Image (cartoon, rainbow, N blue to C red; front, top):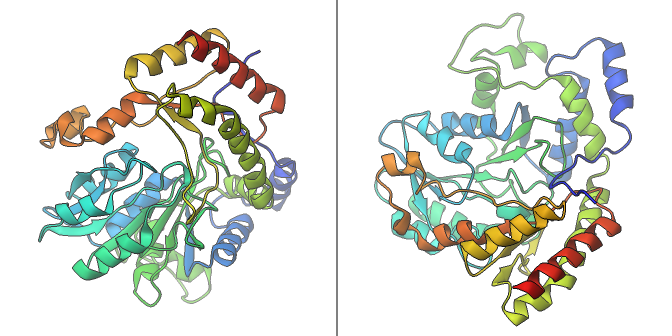
Length: 381
């Protein structure tokens, strides 16, 4: 049996919507399906304003521009994240300041945020790892006390909550991903959520997203023509992608329910190995979090054991993979002056973490094969 790490899930309506938009004749940006997706996200997640983007990377870049980052500014973020989080900051000439994660969730550690704040700090970017929320109440308190922006990297957190509030809606700005590896997909795509009403951020975001023009006002009929009014780029996704995404969002809760079943199955069968010490830690969801069950990870005592398990699973046709390489100890991180020992928990976690295949359409037979294969491997260990 061959089991990939990821496989796209189709709701069954994608082709219907794609055919519809082809017949309508508008496949460029901000068409009817973009409007439907935008309205859905705003209403369902209770967001002040949503703007669809070509990726979460571009949403983060827009956010960095929106808060007016300048050279010499600092932005606090975890090292255990994708390079896009840091690149968005560095593209504005500002500096990412990496902090430690918590052992229980692998999310940013609020106490270390406070340790790293200086007079140069402009913002905090918490990253909701595995669809499990950061301690956003603590982070927002820190931000308010120090007059800082909060930009949520909720790329993995669509349709998940912390303390009954959707991820991506706690901070001043939230950023979502609809990449093919996520729970809800458009192939490529993202969104930026503007949560601070009457802040001027919405108007500025519309201009940045539309090449620095006031074209959005023109499309709404508020002005007779549009022109260049600010800096910006083209962050508008094709309506074809939004048609695919709308089909996915129509099954928002069904997809989440299916993924919870997968999480529960893995958790039930692998928890005994945590108790026996073969697995050091396993993904767990705190009581205050309502996860979207984005991924399932195991953490071993050593990198050697992790790599051995991955190799043996591969020999059995199962694709299990590592995850983020810490930014602070990467080649670029070292150019910024960081050393691997600066964040030991982050460094060690990255070396010992393994993700199991987890996609919405995985069958019980496939999951059973994964578990039976791990049983054999763990007995050998």
